[in-house]
Image (cartoon, rainbow, N blue to C red; front, side):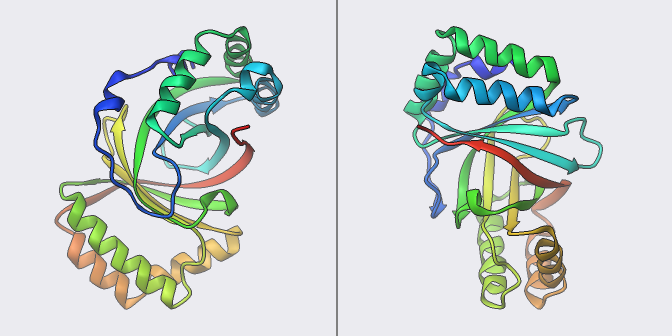
Length: 235
């Protein structure tokens, strides 16, 4: 978890363009194998209530991944920044206050770090913080523009016919991952709706058209089921 403290200067030089309704410029993901969820939540609760935590310029969330293929992680922390400047400020804050060190120690007592990456939203539609369950598809694509166009057409079609009812997005992984280049996600209010919606989506004519368009430029690496556990919005 020490890598939560690292500031990566290259983020400040990136040209960012995102479509959709999202308000965050960047999300950092920290994947963990959690053996004591109470300890992890408690450490984050205590930090958020501290003077240091109240200055944290980011939204923080804890997510559970009960099904995620062969990945060793069971949960991840997502830290969301509205600007790149906020990322820099957060790094400086985390390296300067004892409450941050205590939080990391508390998390480490109940979890083992697995991996981490940072993403820039390429497409972000709807408010994902209001959904209660997600499907995430990690992919590689050799042509982001072509994939994004085809995927947007698919989403537009399925929103129109009611088989997508929650948030959805395409995220570009730009730091920390050595397998996937992007991931897409689709959210819903409950698991039953998510499964029904995905069944309708993947059997639709629009999905068959999408599959033909992206077959040569996209490979799916892994899929995972994600449930929000708790969030700590920026104060």
